[in-house]
Length: 136
Image (cartoon, rainbow, N blue to C red; front, side, top):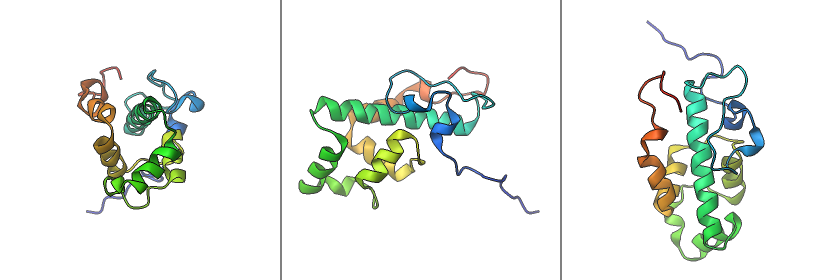
């Protein structure tokens, strides 16, 4: 028996899953699903997690008195880029944090290595609904 993924699969723009696209990565508030997107849709849940990680990174970078570009430059000059996945550039980081492109597991792990706020998010039970009927 052959199983085929649904058209489109998991290739999508994360911010297209949320009601207010400009809020993505820029607010500590949880996002609401876009019209027609169910709150239990795994794509929405992944977008919500990516939003929370992006916001956590943004806040942590600001707390250091830096911007994202300055942080990446600092990590590069300090040799700390070993924690960053190959292909992580300022442009890619911005697209991830805006929800324009999917965060990959390597991206998530690199941010978790760099920021306690991201590690705390990953340990937060609210990020991991155990049933489809639980609120996000």
